[in-house]
Amino acid sequence: MQSNVALYIAAVIVSTIVLCTLFSMYRRRRNLKEYNSVFQEQHDVEDTVIAEIVDQRVQDGKSVSKEMAIIRRMISKDSEYAWSWYCNLVMSFVDEGCDRLTAMRGASRFLNILACVDVSKDPRYIEEYARWEKETKTS
Image (cartoon, rainbow, N blue to C red; front, side, top):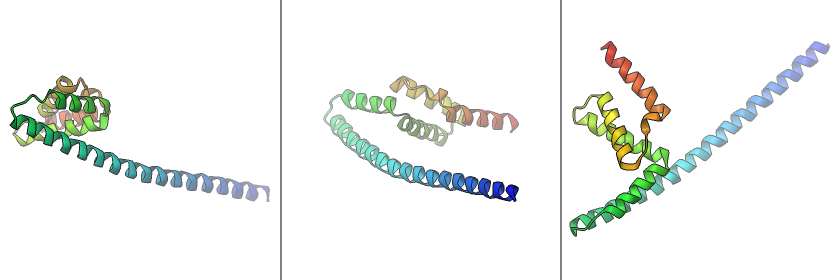
């Protein structure tokens, strides 16, 4: 009888932990989606505004150093924003016929020069680079 009670209590505890974990994961995921949508919207607006200002200044024959300083600051302060720049640069290089590893190194070097951001230390970069390096060796 005592073992049945112990099993019942253990089952209740495990069920409670599972439910709490699932609820917590759901809440974090929902909050992350809300954060990402607000964050993306903010960056889209900033990118659009900066692009319009740069276009106008270039048409007027003026310097765009202030706008580039804003872009550099945004990239250097926000690792996810830097990663999005990196990914876009890699795909631009690949679209122009560059192999993936060279594109990854080139995009990483460009961001390092532009905003002093070393994307090559990012775990995603390390994982992707190793995967593409392995794939290149096998083909």
